[in-house]
Length: 549
Image (cartoon, rainbow, N blue to C red):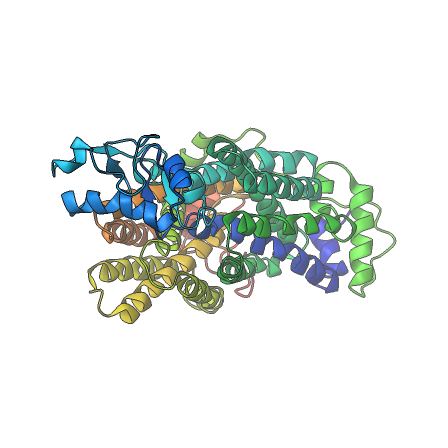
């Protein structure tokens, strides 16, 4: 009875069939990156806004004022009395009624004429010159409510976290392609509802749900691709990240051409409906079918793969086996019970958390540092393209650990230097910051690879799922850390990012090197990874250095 890997090798490990499925599913990376980074454009700060005095709207209509005239009557007295007042978060503590004069609305106002007018905090009466340009102006996320913008991104990452557990479990139980298609449908529907949300509460609820479904699309497409190729080709998991980067490069073009946040939201959500046609082009994962005792369906798909690849699959195959050595009910204790497993788990959890927090922090920072947001965002995406190439070139020559550590050091040092560079050399500051973005991108992509190589077969899926959940936790914290600390000092978040990255670089040097080493099958194999020799001086087993995973 042949194993699945033996049959796959005969049918073609990365032939025409797999390349077609790979290309189709990789488009999911583009749409996922749209959602992942969209807050930069959905949440742009309005350029010009001010607080309206109670009754001003009615008076302006009665007096036939232009918006500029109303603004002058509102702000000029305020600024004459208090030069530091912007009129955005405070207003004169007065109200206008039907007795107010159109020509001189501020006369006979003791609070104003005394020269020391009282001020009141603005409460939901803001006027924006571009009222629908972003969710900030749509839902008044300014002044004391500015933290709600942070909340919108945190809620999205909370949805990613929930989706990783719920839809990850559902994909294992009900099938990869079924959950992928349902996730695409849910992602598109929730995205439309978000675009037309009547209030911020509805916006948050469906942004959370969109995060849940979007994570389902990203996870399942990644799993399907890696399960239908041979073990020597699974490095394509890193290549998938290139499509994520392409999405980052396309998004500023969409935002530039579409003037409203609703339009941007629809543009990044509607493509999910196109993926529903994959029902006719992408089959269920044959590996999954075998784990669910559906060998006949798996064998039929394998014959289709062989046919598309121009291969011949022996008709004598009547049944395929697949190794299934997973722990039935793994727990966190299984990951920390032994010394090397404990060290690997804690360091990998920190690496996931740090990579996500710094990556999202640097992306969102582009929205608050000024300059040409669209061009800067495009350049920051373009600089990520070499990341996958650098990984492919270095990990086979230098191993995993050294590039992993160096990329974190580069990110940390670049963030630190950027924080103290003067503003009068913006090109140099942007260049150094971009180098930091490249470093953390490489670290983020390597952690995907290293995580799977440092856990035994019996705990690999559970270990990767648990550690990567810290990625979403980092994403939840990132907006609060960035925007709140930036309010104190614009460059303060970079100092925090620098410390986190350098510490991560030091910690990953404590991980064992896995270059050329066979994937561990048991916990004992993991414990022997800490040195080049196992127990009793028995040298560790190496695999073909051309095979990465």
